[in-house]
Amino acid sequence: MAQNMTFAINTESPIAVYMQIENQVQFAIASGQLKPGDRVPAVREMSEMLKTNPNTIAKAYRDLQVMQLVHTRRGVGVTISDKAPKLCRANVRQLVTSHLTDAVAECTAGGLSKNDILGIVESAITSGCKPYESQC
Image (cartoon, rainbow, N blue to C red; front, side):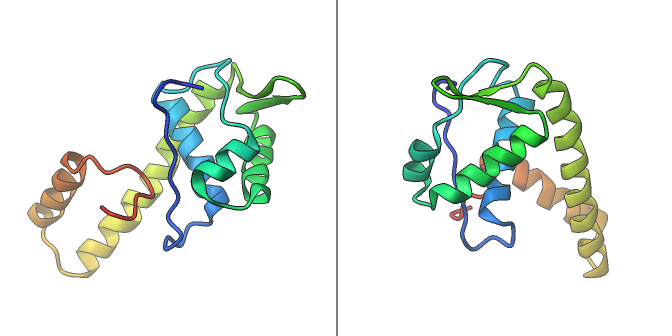
């Protein structure tokens, strides 16, 4: 596993916990924190880290395998695939574009000006918050 790699979940989020885990692995791959061949925590280890059901972690890992982002091998664990960086960059861009488009549409529908929206985006960029942190 990459050094200092941490994951978090937010049970208050409308995004399912297994999807939060999938997304965070994709973010880590897209940003280069996880590289091909790196190992992600074992199901039990991740379950303990996030204080969540092991079946939830297993589902996230199965989905990541179906997306060809990870390989699972008995005795080795779950490792990042060679295809993952390219796939994740495209996936993350699409995901973030969708979220931002929706958020900007909500802002404009709520009467916020372009400068208000840009100020909110700038504040979000400088906040240092990580995805699914509940204290941000």
